[in-house]
Length: 317
Image (cartoon, rainbow, N blue to C red; front, side, top):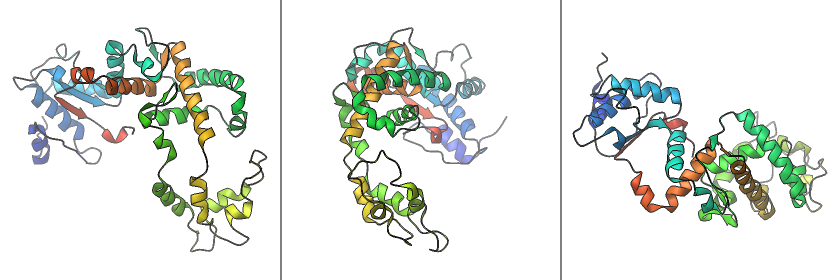
């Protein structure tokens, strides 16, 4: 049997406060987490259902359960229903028990049902999304200009999933809890990235990566008639950097039309998925989050005494 070192034992014995374990691969993080779980549930006033242990794959959850059984007074049968699971499994459980009406909180006139399936295969969902986006494009000629600028429409699905991970959710008439503010961005963060990409290369003898990427600017017929001239965006002949003023010009560009486009694609895809009786992993988290935000009593009811997250670095926003 492996004996914990002093640092591991301190964590295993801890019962209060927030702890972060920052250590490399193979240093015993999962070993320590499972031992700590076993130590916690062996207390007289704690039951397995009081402790949430989250990891990122079903296989990892199964392995953790087996390790815990080997180190505590509970058997595999007694821990069968203990919340040792993935984030997505937790969200699914919450929705199946409490969340059939969750879509209505976003102004969607549809429901989650006991037969709503979780679409795990990305290729299957991409096929569904392509069907959706064809219908959406036909129904919304006002967005033709945006579709002309989209090389691969299925990339919009990736955008939707990223927004869901950041807590940006559409409602029927806007954005949930003013989450639209995240779409407007942070100029300081944008400027840092701009400056990094705009540094001349090869000790100043080669143009910046940003200026190089803009080499084809102006050749695409989709640009608006009043778009800036090429020299205004890239700088004149022989320049190695994009003019600094372009950062502010770009950031301050009016994006109301683009945000409306993203909103409508996002909201109508949620409706489409529900009409086809499926949710993806991002939508599981989205609806569970909205449900818990809006229902304080439910949030208290499903709370845990202890929460532990394994492989936290793999979590999304």
